[in-house]
Structure formats: structure tokens, C-alpha cells
Amino acid sequence: MSAVFITGTGTELGKTFVAAGLIRALRQEGRAVAALKPIVTGFDPATASESDPARLLAAMDRPATAEDIARIAPWRYGAALSPDMAARVEGKTLDVEAVIAFCRDAVAAAPGTLVIEGVGGIMVPLDQRRTVLDWMAALRLPLILVAGSYLGTLSHTLTALDVLKRRELRIAAVVVSESEATTVPLGETLCTLANFVSGVTLLAVPRLAAGADHPAFAELARRFR
Image 1 (cartoon, rainbow, N blue to C red):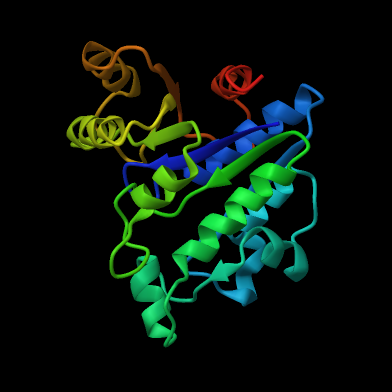
Image 2 (cartoon, rainbow, N blue to C red):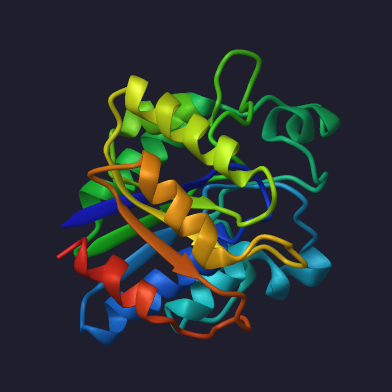
């Protein structure tokens, strides 16, 4: 059994795209794979088939039924806000300890590789005191950090890496996912990051259609044999 947590330097950078690609690559190797997207904001039941949990289920070749979505994404909120704010809109408070316990139980029960996708970036608030960083620190799983290729991503990515290392979290890979309408070449972003990052696998994924595969996903899969 192995598990990996996929996080990002921010939101809307391609975490789900990378998670789905990794799931498909693992399955192509004949390996058992399970996935979780425990916390989802901006969730609309009317368009559930287009949601992040549905994309993970599709990568596992499973239908996006309401039951399956609820199984892999128990904490779903309608407002497209940080989890603490989205829960507050609904008069709720996110139970972070329950989220951590849910993930730990899933890790223990997974027969193969478990892919857990976080929400937003590493410092997104979950409640009044804790962030995604605290969630990851509690689980102590290897991380895949997804970054964009927009102008400014170098500072955001290096800052995120510094924070993760200060918490002594293991970074298995950094994946630079090409940002839409960026003026910064993807390859140049990767080369510059390589000047400042050592001992961490650096990969780049160009903008591709949903469900498309890329050699970077197979390389990620090899990291979790």
C-alpha cells in the first residue's frame, strides 16, 4: 500500500488534472488505485458530472453517481470559497479532525495506491485555526506540489517549497502545469526552478484536453512503486 497527497501553490492550477493523470498511469501498470477529494467547494449537484470528484471517478473508470461522489468527497460546499468560508455560508464548521481521520482510515484500508487531492493551495484555511498545511502535516504523506506557469509562479512555488520543507514534509515531485494564456514559456519556468530546487523531481505538463495523457504522468507513477 502507498499513498500520495496532491496539493498546489494555489487554486485552479491543475491539481485534479494531475491527479487523474496519475490514476490512469497507475491503472495502466495494472495497479489497484483509489482516490479521494475529501473537501470540495463550489460544488453544484446539478453539474456534479463536471466536478473534480467526478473527474477522479472517471479516471478510475467508475460512474459519477451521487453515492460514489459522496463516498470520495464527503465534505461538499456550494460556495466557491475557501472551505472555512464556504462552510460558514451554510451555517457549518468544517470538522478538520474528522477529515484527517477519514483520510487515515482510507490509507489503512487501501489495497493499492491511494491518491488524495487537497483543496486550493497549501495555506488555504480549513477552519478558524488550521490550513491545508496542517492537514498534510497530520497525514505525513509524500506530496506532489502542482504549480502554474504564469508570471509570478516562481516566487509562489519556491515559497511553498520552503514552507513544506520547514514542516519536514516529503515532496515527491513538483509538477508545473501550463497556465492558460501565459506569457511565460513552460520550459523556461522549469529550467529556472531547477536552479533553486534540488533533490526533488521536477516535471512539466503542457495544456492538454481533459483525460489526455502525458509521459509526466507515467514518471509520477514510477515514483510510487
